[in-house]
Image 1 (cartoon, rainbow, N blue to C red):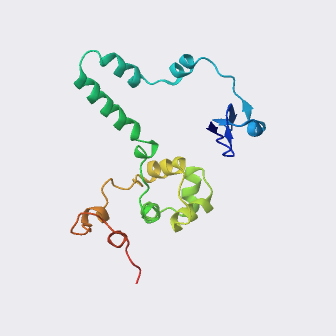
Image 2: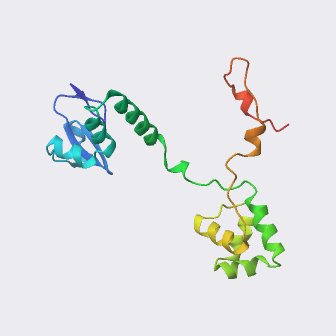
Image 3: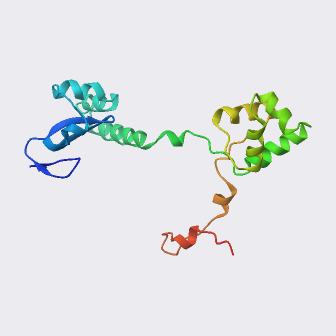
Length: 180
């Protein structure tokens, strides 16, 4: 017996439906919540989404065992990275950087907004730290004001922190900074 992925009921003949892009195996009572997916042959569906690492590791397994294990470990480490690893982090003092660069060029907030083809209220909010600039606005600011709004990869807070207990594990008290 299989459990319905929608309601949790036990079912002997689950049906596969698609709900907002996700395929679920559900009981007959829950099929109305999505559109039924016609099952195609399993080989065609697996090749459609297979990666080159899985097909290459099967071809390498006949050559030598050591290359298979090294290729599988390198491919698994590649799968663990996500889109946030490649993104730059906005500096915590982005508002001061924008304000100082604007003032050093002798521009008012309205002048800067006109140069960037943005609203003056957006520039005010960015300089107050009330809003984060979008990627598009951030690149405009960086290009026009000749500044960098990205945080450095190794921040000073991380490098000077050496907390931890004698056992090597960290507690919440090692990480949190109190506002006394």
